[in-house]
Image (tube, rainbow, N blue to C red):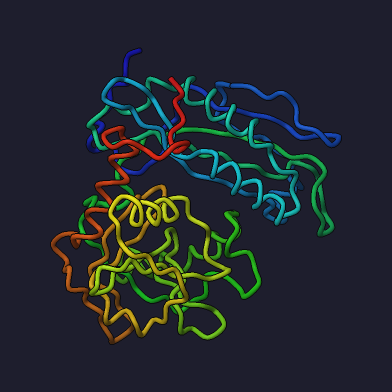
Length: 341
């Protein structure tokens, strides 16, 4: 195996066309066997359900090279379960868990040369997704679907890696009450793009969304869950029915309790409480954990004591532990690591 000749430490979070991707089609009530293809292009009818009514769900995960040369994935079984649940919410035939995991194995093995080397700080991002290929014109679910998986090597999601970022409180809502906020569907992200563009133009890294019903409770950012640390070193995790169930966040909660022996408080978090917190961070597959140094709400600024120079001590410990598990430096809980090659 010979790694591709890339500048692994500076590739950024961008798309690269890799060698193989997985494709499987759903028709007449069943998924076909599926397999790998060289073709990165998707061809659908102009009236396909994905084009007309955005019937689509997706996932994101990463593969890593360990120091001993093993290539592994971090908790892909939870991605399989989340996409299964997302598909059901969007009235799509869910991909069975074992089929999902087999597709991940095939795609990673087909792109081993693209998995960044150990110690590079980069990883192989894996994007499974399902969408409606069946022709529709009235508003209804399609009758045929396609499940695909592609990969791309990536660096840190935010420029600067672990340098603290600034969040802006969005004037827009991320999700509707009793809507699809807890579903990883493309339609949710499309709704956030305008707010995201405005946020970046204003000089901020990301939007922080409040609950749409009262705009008094913290939900999540446009692309990540958020966590906080209070002045007693308790990890405070916002809880809401419209927050996406992040796999990284759930892992961080376990790590905080079982590895770092910290108290974790999962509950609705009022925005006004943030002034009394010591640290904050955004967490997700792409970012892992990005420390937050400041949150801006129009003319008001919340400056966390951890500051804008570096992550606070608890966020740092959480980051070091979860990345240590992902990269094989720290022993993982049983079932967290899937060895692929």
